[in-house]
Structures are given as C-alpha cells and as structure tokens.
Image (cartoon, rainbow, N blue to C red):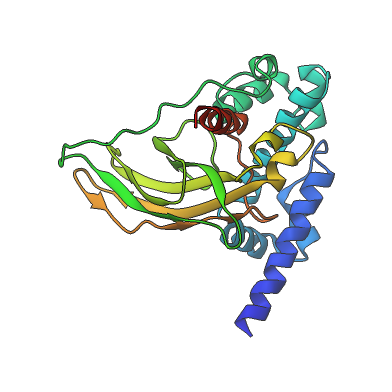
Amino acid sequence: MGVVVEDVIERAVGRVIDFMHENLGEQFTIDDMARTAMYSKFHFSRAFQRVTGVSPGRFLAAIRLQEAKRLLVCTSLAVTDISHRVGYTSVGTFSSRFRSSVGVSPTTYRQLGGLTPPIPLARRSSDLRTSTVQGEIYAPLGGAPGIIFLGLFPDRIPQGEPVRCSMLHRPGPYVLTNVPPGTWHLLAHSVALGRESMLGGGPFAQDQELNVAAFGPVSVRAGAQVKDVDLSLRPIGTLDPPVLLALPYIRTVALDAGAAS
C-alpha cells in the first residue's frame, strides 16, 4: 500500500514539474501548483520537498535558470528578453540570481559559450586534524560513467560554488579534505562514457546524457572523519533538481584527458 501511495505522490509532483516547464514565463503561485497536484497547499509543499529534496519555489527557480542557460548559448535573444521568457520581471534580479547560481553573469556565460572558469578541486591532506568526508562512488546500472564531479553544497541543488569538491576519472573511493564544519549535501554528476561531446550540443542534450547521485544532509564537526558516505550514480530523472553548474567544463576535462591518454 505504501509503495502505491508513494507512486501517486511522485506522479502528482511530476505533473507540477511539467506545469513549471510549460509555464516558465508566467507568474504563478504555490496555490496554482497545489491545484495542479490536486493537493492542499500544505500537503503539496511537504510532498514536493520529500520527493525532490527541495521546496517547490527553489525547484522552479532552478529550472528557470536552467532554461536561461540554454537560451543564452543556443539563441541570440537579448538577456532582457531571456529574463522575461523565464519568468523574471526584473533583469537585474535575474542577472543577480544567475551569477550566484552559475558563477558568472549571463553575458559572460554567453561569451564563454557556457564554459565557466574551473572550480578549484580538493586535494588530499596528511593533516589528521582536518575534517574529511569519504566514501565510494558506484557506477550506474548497465552503464559506465565518464568524468565524475562531486561536491558538498548547502542544499540539494548543485549551484554556486561548492564548499569542497573533487573530480574522479572512474567510480571508486573518494576523500574530500579540509571540509568546514556544517551540514552539507554531497552531490555528484557525470556524463556517460563516450558521450561527453553531447554536452552543450542541442536543447536538453546535457540532461539526456547525465548521471546523478545525492547523499545528505551530512553533518560535519571540526576535526571529524565522516565515513561511508556512498553514492550510486543513476540517469537523471524528472524529479531531480536541475544541475546549474556549467557542465561543459566537465566535457573539456574529459576530452583533454582522452587526448592525453
């Protein structure tokens, strides 16, 4: 019975996410989303958070910025027009949110073709007094991931600069060192092996080739070693929050590694 109820809830949340995608440029409220799910506002917000890991408002903001990233690279629309198309009434607010989530301004993102500057990666440390998070990354069923990016973020959406991050060339053990005290979400994503060149190709090509994994929240105390934080990669689904980091950077790392091998 519980499995059936959960399936019904996931389908309701999926309807709302489809509604979000279809109405990105419109102004709608949590009440509109709850009606689409056919739940009360209170029940809907709790169900959405449980299924996706984030609030409806945060999820909507993320898919609006995800679509803005696509429009910046794949069209010649002005930044103001793009901001209105994805539901922002103020281009200043849009630019500020875009910069804080993606790492650069919309104009710079377009000029760089979606390739933002690399994020400094974590290095191993022999200092046992520092806090560490460690575990194992497992490959997706029936597939072989390529370059794997993993990072610790304040919440379930991979956006902005992670507090610590690393990149693996294959599944296996990882260690994140010098982790600051706090409560974090460990998020990982990768592109299927041999499919890196699809990134940045056409609309939604990134998502179709993406594997993701999440673990959290993880509480880290000063000087602590947090072990067995294991992740199993799987193809991204409708209920997963969008990845707002610039994925073409991973493509570049992967292709450079292939050329060097």
